[in-house]
Image (cartoon, rainbow, N blue to C red; front, side, top):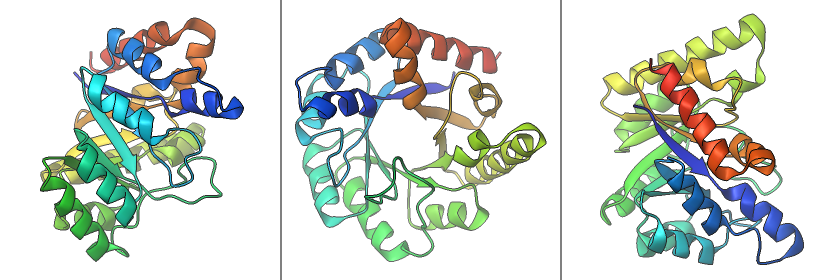
Length: 240
């Protein structure tokens, strides 16, 4: 069965809009777990636009499944993760002006820095993945720098339509197959929703999907538990 990681960043986005105490990402995370989430994902950004350090610390203490910390490859974030020791860490690119992560990390261009950071976290017992575009060279270099896993960026697939979307799905599937053959654990995410997730979830080498915005958006209408159950049902359908 494919795992579902629920990203609760945008619960914190709503809270930070008023600098209030609610809604609480911790409460949302615990309800998501109750509804069947296999893990909780948060991105602690440099500008702290949504998730804060205290959120991550509380999640680390209270989650019953696992905590996946998305993070930039910076000395400050690596040091924070070394102290926190999340179950998983996923290195992602980060730009202050972007609304959300716009693409994969360039492992080839930043090979030495990424390799050193991967080893530092692995030495603390943390499972490390790299968020990459579905490109052969990025996948191969991810293996070379010692990552445990890759999370394949599905944003281009999600933004395409018709025949172009199917072409992008095949690109994702090819990258997933390569990563699997190289011995990397394969995750995927970005832009996935209730309408487009089935073709990606149907790629059997993928063991985990991380989904945030669409689940939190659905939760505004039906509640977090129902939103998570609906997504889990789709993933189960994709795997027959």
